[in-house]
Length: 536
Ligand SMILES: [Ca+2]
Image (cartoon, rainbow, N blue to C red):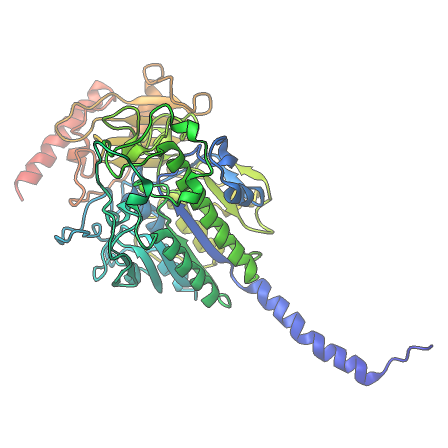
């Protein structure tokens, strides 16, 4: 048999192939979808891929195996609202509009948090400017509906979840917020805080009709399907494993009953809700979170989006800290039993590593090498320039941006250069400031008004990641250098006052370590600012 080349057949083949070529080119040129998953209070050591050996996290571990793990990634703040502010606005705590978990003050039971302003530009707004459709699903915390801080006024086209962080203290709340409307989800909601001093503690007594994380996940999946044909930014600030502890029973049953033999039931004495098996309950919350991450990844695959989507998974701050009853942490959490900080010092609310260093996994096919590790120190303000770069979006904002573009580090191409060190300035938990420059980290505590400020501490994180050996007295010159860098350009926020934040007078009211002659100059400056302050 002889093959004859028929001219009309050749024409037909070319004609058919042309649209395919065109489609392939279009797919290549489509900016990647961005999925940013933010866990709440998940510690550095609470994932299998970060050394956790009790709690099972197969989906996030798999995500890490297909992408990279950051080993020195930090949140921008050691608690919820300011951490979210640093993430979405690209500013560190010396510049950020939100510096604490302050309520909006609107007098409602769930007031929402103090709103970010209209002037501030969020990364969602930047992405929107180049055609992204943006959805946020989960805990917001940056301002109630009908204020400038509403997600719908900060670049998001769709929002579903807990606008108010306090409403998120329960997984069975009365309502969730859908765009700017409250939608009732439980007719018999469970409050986030109850005690049961005696009698049997039953997990089922703290459950109601609708488990909020499942509803939030469903809406996120709908968003993926609806926007599968155009670039989207999906921000998923999931609530787990923040207490109260109300995970599904199927996950609790996966963990050994013996775990809770030692301390027994939790009766709500450290706040939030009682639990019959608090250690199993805590692990169950993380497994449930892991399952939800798995569902998101499955859906990206289902809609053929997984190749052209960057997925980032991290946490807003370190694991839950201790409280009055030393057998449990707040809400019955078992941060010590699980070695939740992975050996780092401090917990949520602290600027020691345990409070701010967080797990961070990134999967970006063809860009990030599967199974790799990124050791570049980085923090939340870096995501603003990084995501803008990924989307090829121009950044035209008046606000100070404190982060650096991490795409070079993620692709293992170039080590990013950080002009200004990473800093944290937090007026909660007694008032703390911290600065990391290279491997050196300096930190001061007790800076809140009325407290006696403690001396600077200094740690070499390369040799002492657990911050157990304070070398400040050995290297006063390094401390003085970091102190100078710390006070580079803070700006004052009267809404979030603190003796450490802001104007030169306030800053210099802290006794500085610098030499005596410098101190006398500072005193003159202090007197000058006091005069100025009292004269207006
Ligand atoms: Ca948090």
